[in-house]
Amino acid sequence: MTRWVLLLVMTFPAAYCLWTFLLTSLLGGRAERMLSARGLRALGREAALQYLLWGLAVRDLLLPPSGTGTDGGGPVVVLVPGFTETESLFLPLRRVLERRGCACRAFRFDSLRCDPEQEAARLGSFARFLGAAYPDRSLVLMGHSLGALLAARAAAGLSGNKPPLLIALGAPWRGTLLAHLAPRRCGRNLVPGGEFMSGVTPPSGPGVLNVRSVHDTMQAPFDSSVLDGVEELVVDDGWGHNSLVWNPRVVEGVVDWIQAHA
Image (cartoon, rainbow, N blue to C red; front, top):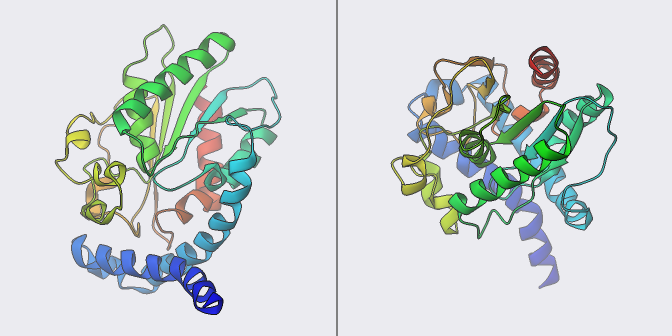
């Protein structure tokens, strides 16, 4: 019995990535992009990263709620993970950000059981707290997937002379059909036309950076991650929904953008 349980645990991440990859290929409207050498490379990267992130999630749960790290006196970056994710997803970005003088703070929430509306409000309160604690420093809200939508909602509710910068990574701005498969209400809120998605106003302006991959393994329809009227960083060489955040060009591009705009 133990052997079968272990086998299930070991195969689930790869099976999950394969299942979402196939659904995205069929439902996303751009099967020729996914069913290609680069699309298959994105699948492989997603599966490999999923095993690592599952292992690191245990460590994340033992860290202080806002995490720890160096503070070089630069911009304060709030890391907002997505559905079923923890702050380890931002590990490469966090290392480079702290090396460049930024202070990183993680926003932690129970993404399986939460109400996105409430979490967006709680994130806004956290951002206001950091703004008051560091009044002379730029504030950056950086979220992945659901976390990017929460960051956009929170940023829209913040007022002041210097609004926060917003970085969205793999955000389903129009929702994703794969959200129908989510086991809890929070994930199902991301379906196109759903209650939460209907209240999401896509951000615009020079203080927004949208990062997306043309081989995103969770976007259906394909163009859900496209955001008009803002600066975009587009990856087209085989990186999926989560692995996008570990792309070296994305890491350097995001950090350079923060330093240019903060």
